[in-house]
Amino acid sequence: MGDIRAIASGLVATTIAGAEIPSVIDEIPALAIAAAFAEGTTEVADAAELRVKESDRIGTIAQELSQLGIDVETRPTGW
Image 1 (cartoon, one colour):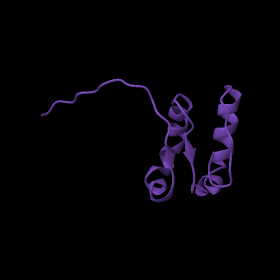
Image 2 (tube, one colour):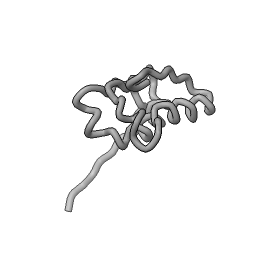
Image 3 (cartoon, one colour):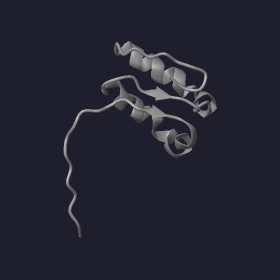
Image 4 (cartoon, rainbow, N blue to C red):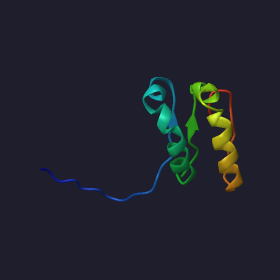
């Protein structure tokens, strides 16, 4: 038994790269959505695996966010 206390706040941009990538690789698409609503510019780097897994998830995420009017600049290993 325990208590959880949550406080709402705005989202703030961040950089996800390096050693963090393997532990969040499957969550990157969901993080991209959250980043779209964060204040500032979020950068994902060192995630080249997203280009070659089941599909080019970097390209697909960028395309879908762009269709929603969100500015996305892709790079070989992220955006």
